Image (cartoon, rainbow, N blue to C red; front, side):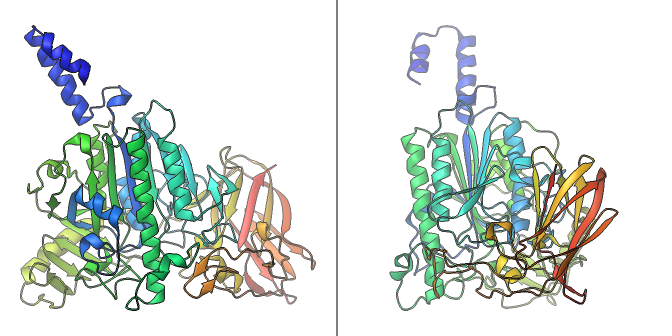
Length: 608
């Protein structure tokens, strides 16, 4: 800037002055002119299950969140911003700019959390524009190729189970303290409490000497339950008005809050704070804390009342000259974030047919009103979609719930008075818009995810029961440990014809547990705590059930093989020749009468 000042002092040529003004304007607005120093860095922070009321800046009298509050005060705040009522759909919409239902995500389990492989993600757009890209935390949009973060535009990924700690593709013994993490497709142990580990990785990433700007997606697994902490002192300072389980929930939020402070300090220390865009939001409505404080709203996570999907969005960018400290009150949603970042950062992309739109004009003029539109959020957690099932239609201050209840939030913010009979014309308008929405989102509905086998970037395909396409499945290790009597299958796509080694087990192989027995927890360190006490087994439950398994039948392609097992066997192993192309695969654990006990919960495939 000092050199530019000297240039202004000596310039005589008006044309040169105009050119210089253009260059300076592009610098301030971060034009994508091929010069990496002009491009803003971008950090997108998402917390898990933190509701609109779980901030002291939003009036919570029990909780102190000084760093989140500081970011709130120094940002443009979107006060009528909405996501879906549950996790994976919100993440799909955020990263694609499309309704999750349209992008193939309709559930958090049963395979319904896999973002369609053809969708373009936020990370891919930034990557194509010269950014280095990283994800530190929760993905929840698919495991195995082609659904992993590194298949969807992220150069670097550090995370645990796809759906969270303790889910079936997570390291079996993880409890959020000194755990094993997936790092770019390989599992490695790291010391520390999970949110600290992710923020440590993000701070290391921004501190690297690299000419490229960075895009960091930082979605933590906290404060989602089980509310595990590295010590009980984190929750001990809450008073008697806060139940113990809520104190653990709040303590998780405060730990994230302190990490946000550390991250912003690192940006300052590296001289990158001014030209870094920070977006902060949460993935759905609140959970444990809503009974104490819910910012006057009705509903919570999983519901389509306002408390289930209205969340904060803070946008902060000092170099962008945004109207920090101002509120945007117009209806916006997760589908608007990617189109907005493309405009704000002047990114180039192919036409992406977004469902959302850019809110960039409102970052500079918060009172500016964009064209009125109707938006929808839903909780379609069924194998067969049903129109208006758990759906909220939103138009201005109006909310049509499940096509049966109508509320006007300006007059009735807590949604206590159904005025459907008094305003049928409003309901009719929203219904017509929903007809258009339904026609747009339902083509190719409920596609079953198909996992690559034998892909060069994914040498071992790991299949777990969370992805069985069934209405009810065991999605965490504790449900598997209790012996859930369910059996499902997976769809795979064999990339190369050849011989493959297939291993099937009742337990994940890292347990080294016999098929007929249970894992040994004698060496597990009690380094994490729940409100109920130390975690000395699994975070979702302690029952360990031995199953009377005598054989496993395996079906894949044209093969059907039954293998008897012995008391010391930890798994069965088969070498089978598989033809190229898609096929189904499943294993069944059998008793001594040849009857099915359950499906083989864990299956590993690799090309020989």
